[in-house]
Length: 632
Image (cartoon, rainbow, N blue to C red; front, side):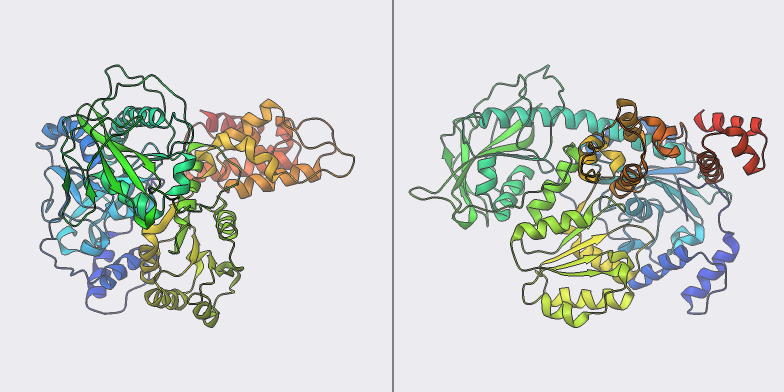
């Protein structure tokens, strides 16, 4: 299998086909079969996928997902051109259920669910897991159906938070043994067009929802919440009243799964509403001119199996026809109004009231004080703080150095309970299974770091413990790296519903200025604190930081220890990769290695290009030419 960053020869397919046949018949595999291919076949066997599957179960969906609504205009423009070719274009949702397909390709209509649990390894499943373009060719697939099929898939990401909403796949007959797939450009262009349409729609809808929320929350001390199934706006008073169960009830109402009145109009948006970016997951925002509120017709009724709602006079954003929900845990009532935009319900605004004659129970929520005010960071930490109010296991994922352990420790400290049991798989300090077994049932929190490094036996033991204690207070940090084995994948699947992905530092460069004081060591007595020139700050913000906050802290500490001059840190003092900035184009692995070697030689020789060229054994003109090439 290959990925977007590789332009290389694929594994020879004939030997791979023979190896697959030996795998299916239980014979030992020959040498030279890529480990990731063998792991994919083994996962399919673990999930019980029959290699001779004729047709997967057609998925059942209610309503049309937002990704399909946004993608439909794009796909319909492409459909006529696909009908005359030998390729198929497929759109899936985040669970890899096929939402739309067009064109011509072998067996493109037989599998309507592309999850590995249903059909084994394929490019869509790999793209969803890796969050980047991925390919699968012929015998890399587990199914007999796809032995003569090549496919390339690209994930579709939500513009507001980077969450994977689905995948776009181009499938064709078996391609020449060369990457990238000929349909890679089409898949990437389609995914980009869908993401652009999602961005346009989300900005307008979020703006309308934000305006409705702010009008409802204009009364001092008002407890107001606005939800659209993805974003959540809560006033400070509402955050103290709502339990996770109450939030879930309101979200069901926002998503159309809970009780909802028959309405002819809600809070609708006026034409020409300005597209000012709206914050997500925050209780505050910039007020903007907005739509007029209109009435909502809400006849008294009761949803089957759900709480009753009834017409209620409502203040603020909710009109005179709002309906009322009884909140669980004696938290009071919520008077709910649907928010509409272009005749479509995009969310709800709820005004909360404590129970009559009493005070609602206050729900505590950990406050996250880690540095960072960007929307991606606030969204992730707010979601983690919300999940931490329950006793459910919590999974924190993200690249190395993004702050998973720091956030986990802060969430645990905010609970005010006994010190957690900390197990770090990177230190080989696991194997304390007796300790795990005693800690989890007794309510003592367990912080498990670097779950990706757990031995398979330890993962199996942890899975067994969670089977016995599904509500154990467990926090797990996980850095996606290699393809997880079946046991680890089962653990990740178990924790998936209570998981948060922390954004990489390159996705929130505006936080770097706030992070610098937090990662800078204190000055020696009598010395001034470390400060930065604007040029140096701009260089720090442009650097991609593959090691994230950990790498930033290491660079800052090294500067603080090695500096012998006074005044702000200048750009010239920064390490070469940071000072030079990222390459203007994507470099091949060879070019990246060359650039790293040249920058290291320049660092060793104080920036003298002639000496650096001599040390590398190349002409000075060659060094100049390569440096120019990396910037072009």
